[in-house]
Amino acid sequence: MYKIAVLPGDGIGVEIVPEAVKALQAVGKKFGLEFEFTEALVGGAAYDDGGHPLPAATLELCQGSDAVLLGAIGGPKWDNLPVELRPEIGALLPLRKELELYANLRPCVLFPSLLHASTLKEEVISGVDILVIRELTGGLYFGEKKREKTPDGGEQATDILTYSTYEIERIVRFAYQAARKRRKKLCSVDKANVLESSRLWRETVSKLAAEYPDVETTHMYVDNCSMQLIRNPRQFDVIVTENMFGDILTDEASMLTGSIGMLASASIGGDVGLYEPAHGSAPDIAGQNKANPLAAILSAAMMLRYSFDREEEAVAIEKAVGRLLEEDYRTPDLMEPGKKLLGTVQTGDLVAKYISSIGG
Ligand code: NAD
Image 1 (spheres, rainbow, N blue to C red):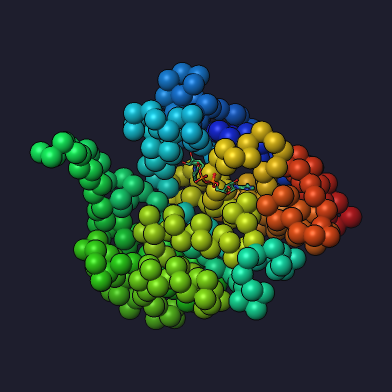
Image 2: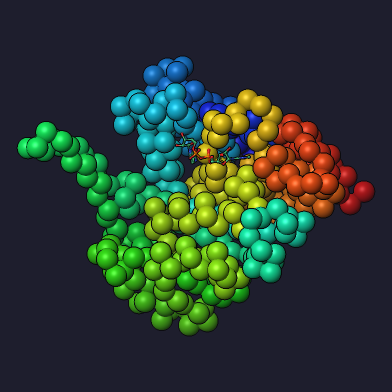
């Protein structure tokens, strides 16, 4: 029995998470696994209900579960709350910190049938298979933040960016282990020409590189990396980078896969892994059955792989997603002339159906 905390959150989170649950239920039925799903509020929905975006009961549920399935949180309705109550800062960051989720994995793999869906040329993106590993509990997002009045009547805002050797070594070792299981190439991304934290990052990576002689190590500045991802993405195997650079680069990398609605993520480190799509709550399309649930469904596959060590079951979900795309079904974000348009719910239903019919 696997205990899963289900946190749909806000916006399209409440639409896509049930589709990921459907996929897990179909896997459970097919492969004889038992899941216990317990739903809880998080983000703006939790704030509206009880005045805090991360209620103690939600955190306790997560800590007592085997894994967490999260949708997305935030939205314009909560943008003007005091900073500590804003869903992203009041819920997402503490959840990552409390569960010690220091490693965020975002596989950026192009399904061959989506070759035409990307805005980039086919010859550039064909065969793209990148794993971005983002440090998730340090850096600018977790540093001290303050606002002060200035003598001229204006304000001054400060965000502190801190990284320790321990934090860098922990994520970089993780990335080397991942690279060893892939094509053995690690690109460390920083801004060592300007930032002191990046200089420590680069020195630490350079020292660790000696322990992994079988992995080819390169260093790249983040501005160059953002350009290289578009120019020649196939040069990358594993990218490891700090929190904010990883946040931005993975949104960019999602376009290599056709849509941000395709990009899954796993956040791991402590005893309980958290799985969520890389996108946000997409208020512009929320409540319209237009959201692509595949990133959430592929995140459920990552849960099976990384938290439960169920490779065959993870692959079953990925194959079902591949089949749906091969059969030309598309949500609006991936729609092209000649393809068949599906809503969020219908996409989830079809994935569950294809999982059930695998091998038979
Ligand atoms: P977003 O990812 O929500 O949306 C960006 C664009 O991508 C929008 O046009 C949206 O319609 C589209 N999109 C996103 N997911 C999609 C999907 N599954 N299917 C189809 N289209 C999709 O980013 P944003 O607009 O910058 O942020 C909206 C809110 O989400 C903000 O409050 C932000 O803080 C929050 N956010 C939350 C998370 C999280 O929960 N982890 C991450 C990023 C942003």
